[in-house]
Image (tube, rainbow, N blue to C red; front, side, top):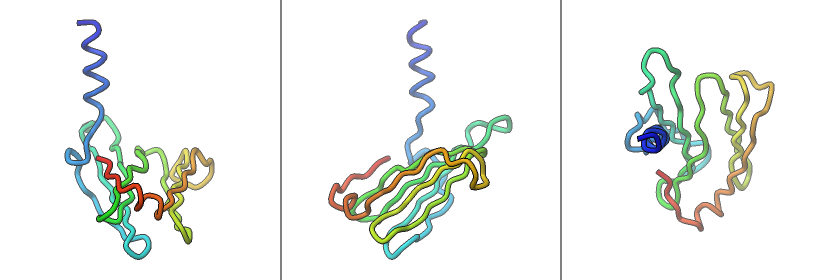
Length: 114
């Protein structure tokens, strides 16, 4: 029982895209989209959790990030890809993480994340 309870807690926190509420899909450049999903399962006493996916709808869907109400996520496009910048607050001050996604490479890999 002692081992089962922590495992249950760990695996019950992970959400598949099908279990989330789709908020919106935005086209950021020709044929490249950001899909935004939310998990409101925390109730009134927990913040919402947001899930970001990068996709072209045909060749790939890449999970990009999870954020809560306290972090800011900003997406910038480049000629060959997309930058995802995550800040410690909603205001662009303290950069927490920055990731570059090469769109052509993602198309060649042909992977779909859930």
